[in-house]
Image (tube, rainbow, N blue to C red; front, side, top):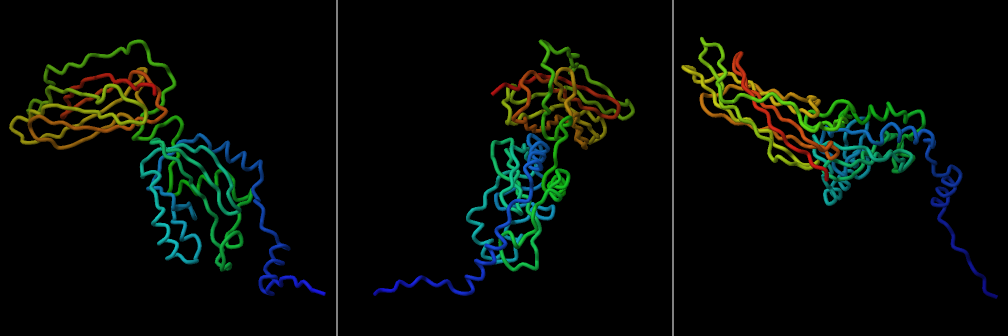
Length: 314
């Protein structure tokens, strides 16, 4: 008679299995209602990155941290391996929008985003590592609960040094705002007089003349960049230099866009001068006709010119 022997489980492993079966792998402690609240709070909100963001970063304790440093195990090996997979998702200053919120584990929340240049990624918010656990996984980290995932708490962790949310009524300083009103059939503009020199204080013998401005290109798509150019001549008389103030203003439907005017003061030599400000157009900027006004001032004398450009629909 043949006796069949069953495979024996090593005692240490058997003990671990019993422990895990008795305790069980912890289920997510964030309820469905709280996840709905998080989604309603974050999805659709626009922000600007305050630091370069890669696929190797997580938000840990309110700061962007390499994922290898959120646990004390094999950091050197982790960093070495991660170099092969490192990928820049968004540079500092890039704007983006939250597209989803999910809980991928008991200690990680994922906020999916899409940047204005079309790249996608995640802002991973991770709980703190528990120093008394010398292991990976759910027993090594604190856990997200309804008490610790209040929208305001998560927003505070994100905005300490990782991103800055944009006020829906105020655009970022480097972004053309989305304006709700439709552009009028024709904008009412005051023609600029760039042929007659505007004299400053006679005693200073300083003047600015021949101011010309340009928006290049004149037709631009959302997501692209437009250059706002000012060209002018400084006549400083007996002086070699003069303090010059350049002011750039963007208007839509006769309204100045948030973040404007842009003012630049500098010391310029006598002669022809030119400067350019590059403006990123958000992917969801309203299409239509915009007005760019460039003004140059010396002392109390100013001269300006306006031109129009168009943001086309995709």
